[in-house]
Image (tube, rainbow, N blue to C red; front, side, top):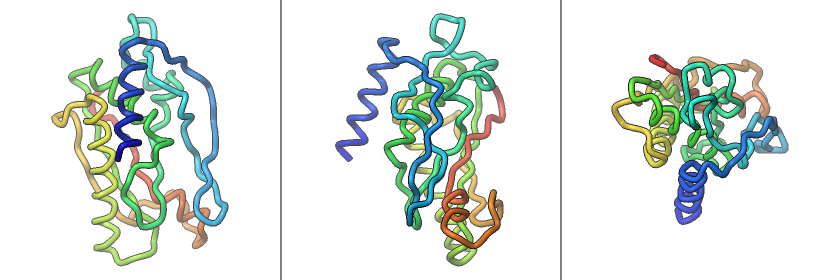
Length: 176
């Protein structure tokens, strides 16, 4: 808990001071059993473009951090991994800069477990991301959580690499 608080404080300080830099970094984070899933760089922080550090709708397609709209979870877990805090901070800043923006957080699970369990797990994952966005300054009124459980897999093979890709929350902007 102390680590998450520290990360949020550091992220807020970087936003306030404009001292962080954008990087075009595409890393992979190891999943369980040595697999890897896409990740964000812990050094990628929000800045915005062209408008004094404020995000615009155009940044959703051009900003390296804002283009990352998926966070991944460990097996049977609903806690946000520290390496995804930077993505959350970018999207929270976008919501702060764009009060009319709205976002749906779509929680997903892999195929293991019952349908009902996976729907609950997807919702808990979405709620964890929602709490992190709000902790970074995003407004609860701009966020909606939906769980799809195991119903919307991005990979259909039955192996750990595939399951790791399905354990996710996706950021979907419904109003920019």
